[in-house]
Image 1 (cartoon, one colour):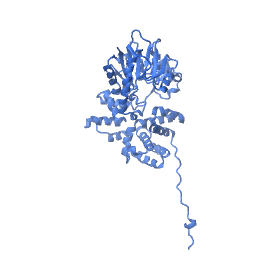
Image 2: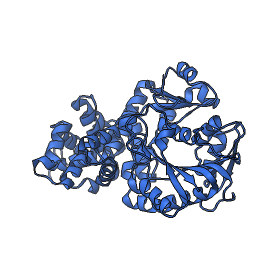
Image 3: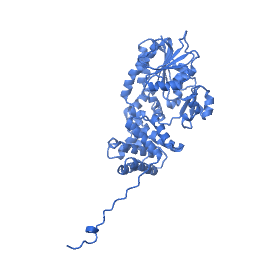
Image 4: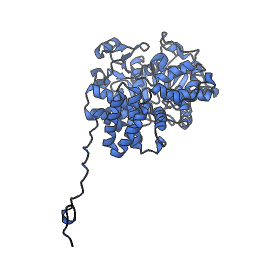
Length: 476
């Protein structure tokens, strides 16, 4: 047998191992945005409740916190349109991808199409994130897909994917589909807003666009003057509510001493107007009982404001059926003349006819607060509205029973969906025992675009508030 030559037998070199790639470390803002998407997907977390905790845990500076917020909220808000674009850049449906990979792709596509981050930088940063959270193999897919996304801007993608407008031979259905794609709303929500606004498609376009704007923080002055609060927090007096301050510069409102000691609170100006309307002194009555009722009081903002607005001889009963929400009410109204109970408004412990004024801010779809809850538009379904209608009817019926003859009930929802607003009120009126008041006359006279009445529907694009609905009913 010949001796072993070079490279044979015992002299054979061991196989060369590929060097292990260095472990990727994503930048904190993108990692936080990814963690937010994962929390929503995996455990049904709410974006507006989850993101503050993620930011606090990382201790980011103001700039990085702002970037994480923009990327997280923006990606959630634009999810439907991003998926439509990604579908054109994939060889499969986005739904067939591993969910974490789809989260990364959405996050990268949002950066490319909606921020000033250069496309090459957005792709590189997202591929780096992908390598860390989903692995090097999927990272290569992310790189290829995002490069395709970056070949067009958002308007070009919309033009390519959207059906023709009605003026170009399209139908009303195609108009709805086009607006849904342009503004990243499910089509059923676009239809609901169209039904409430009427046939003006230009205003519908404005309303949808307003839902995608970054909301500013609204504060309410309770135990201090509005102007004093505005000066202390470097804010601006709200244009409608005599208690409102708006904070255009952003930041965390809970850092303000006025919020911590409950002289002020965080409350949308539209929500404040609902309490102001019910407290309107012109809604007077003979021989009042001295009791006002807030039936669905959690988390307590309206009850606290009603306490500040009510005459000195009025006591307020605030109820919520969820113990943790009634605890929030108790905290918000601590030191006020508010009696808090944990009680179901459909099976209440109070007697009928005991209250002069009743507020029922009914649980609803929340379609009026889509600016503040970016995931709500994809979380809610038409079936949710159908189920909520039964609850809303029951609560309004109980509210009318709780008010004494001559008393006033304010029916309020944070939704413009007609099934949750005017149709609920019409149902209650058809049963008899109450009549409508013109709610416009109980609101500040400078409020514009309130329509013909007797109800009030606020809108983000008209009033800069959540889309609150108000009906005032007088009990016979």
